[in-house]
Image: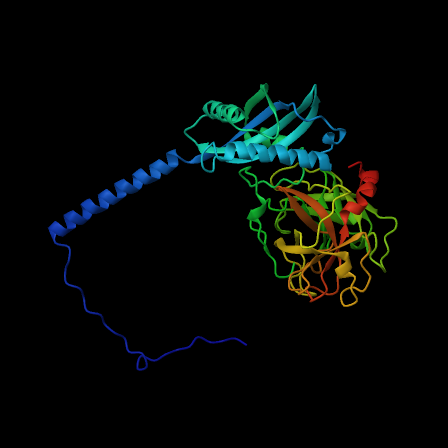
Length: 438
């Protein structure tokens, strides 16, 4: 039913003629007004000039140094191993402690360990340091300032790791070099200006979630689409050629030539598009029980990593997330049960739920196996939904993101006592390695 515009007669609402104001702009007042405007404009120009000149720029440095009070472990060579993760976090935390209070408010932004390598009587560290300083500063002056802060801290404070001072080198690098170095690290989110996107910048099948606010917020998220039929499932990029998704996504069509993949925060237009070259479904996938609901899709041509497209980290097989751990699910699925696909990527924060709780008679009554992971809320309201299948459930560990779950199944969407059930990725690390070498 269309609504016509409402019409009113002049009798109902008579027109009012307002009195004219008496003339205000005599010559003296006009002169004073012009002088005041000129003064205000002058002050405004001064303020703008100050902020333009003092505008902060990002400065990137590659730091290399030897730590002498620890020994090299073989697992340091695997960036997804617990040993590498824990040692990297210790080093990054130490750098934050050194520079956050000493380099000026907000100057130190982030550090990332790139590599841990064996060194005689210790371990050699290669890492990226990111700072913000006024654009009037130059890289050499800042480099000397950083070195001075580090050496002063080494003299006056007891650090958990002993840095060999003569081994310390600091080299200025540009954004492109920094980006290339970080390509070797999975699970890192970057803004378009190549600034690290920290975990707290993200607050909220996605029911009651919110739209992804910026490109690159979830750069491993992909849309799996059947040619001529559009979006079917989500997927997660785990290398520049391989993606993880759910086996049930390919129940109706397993022909890779019929599938395409897109990346970006919208399905249309996509930021990047690729054809699928190969599909590998878990040999023991059971449709009736949803067990082993995991599959791999290989891109026909590799993607280049950028702030928009990046791989997520695979978790160590020993990872254990306690109940109520905060995790994020993302996807293009419907926001109501049986609703339409969303063109814009959505995200929602949910919490892990123990298998014991999920297997209660009033929840899923024993249907959740050891290869599955429950996440959501017992009161419902926030959940994955139709179209989110195969997509990522990710966990943040010190601003490095890990794929802990794959959207698999659940009863309807966002119902009380019916949380989402995900394929537990850590249980399939050997299978993934066997098929892909990752």
